[in-house]
Image (cartoon, rainbow, N blue to C red; front, side, top):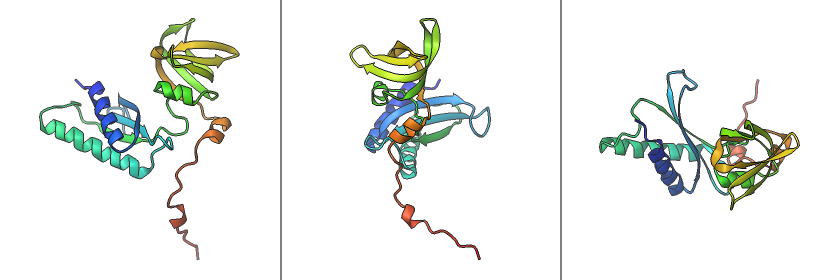
Length: 186
């Protein structure tokens, strides 16, 4: 049995130790290499930028690998089968997994999938109109109708890549770009 709740807790601790916020942990079968491969996906971000650069991903990957290995050596196996560890930034069309994500991205288009029917629907696509933290309610405008969606019913949600989202996103970290040397053809 795989203990995803415990893995999520450990990933949160390791991310926080590096100054990152944990965005999502997923464990799934099927990946880039083949359908039989298992993947442990960890998404995190720097709170000040909303992104991770490659060195950040590598640091968190090493921390997670070392922590899981140490637990396994002590007899605490969190994942039974072989898997691939994938650590990444959430990206511009990021998943919305936390209440604060819905609040932060109000005004942008999102796709929301629910765990059960709400007003005869399980899927919504439209602009995030607001988030009521007290009620934990997401308001989304889909085809001109505003729906109030309980946060606890959200199974999957992500931003839709639009020009508005691109304009609102923070620029990517460009440190080191001045160090790139282009080769000239002879």
